[in-house]
Image 1 (cartoon, rainbow over the protein chains, first blue to last red):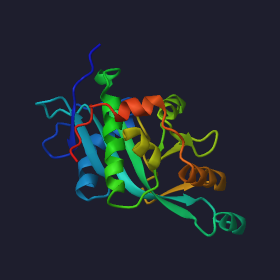
Image 2 (tube, chains in turn orange, purple):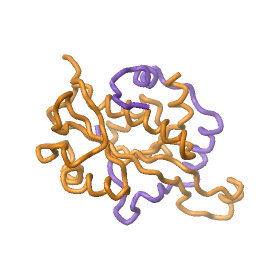
Image 3 (cartoon, chains in turn yellow, green):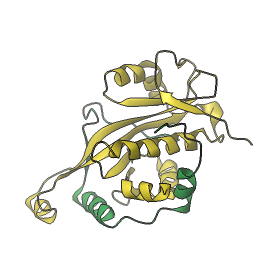
Length: 170
Length: 52
């Protein structure tokens, strides 16, 4: 099966989003109803995948600057981390592709673009890692294949050091 | 392929993790692992339309 060719660009009002549907209703609703609004407010930045010469959205991802913070800051933990209790990171807040595009490489294209954009961002603003919340165990396993690590064994919260992405891109 | 979204109350501002998770991240930053073959293949691909 040939991969779908995609063009990925920042979301605009011209993108056709109303027919977008992915596995997760909440994410579908978010993309259709809130993604552009949040993008325009710079709350998140949303990037949309379309086939060449089309404005019909077949996937998207969003990025946010965040900090990885200790859930609690007990004295012991503060000692352990020499009073560092937060680290700058980039949060891959959402990744989704249209149901019809399953297995056609759109998800991979979105990840490639997101990873490269995270590296580009890190050239302009300090960040140590790319972090995400995997939707489920199956997806967490896929992210592990790319080198993401779970914060704890059972966790779906994951990270990859940006240095690892940088080394992979050389 | 999906990631879930931050808690509405959180507003994406912080990503809270346990002390063990924080330690794991610290160690990974200090001693980054070798990229997986799958990641290298992805990063050397040409799917991205990102213009630098």
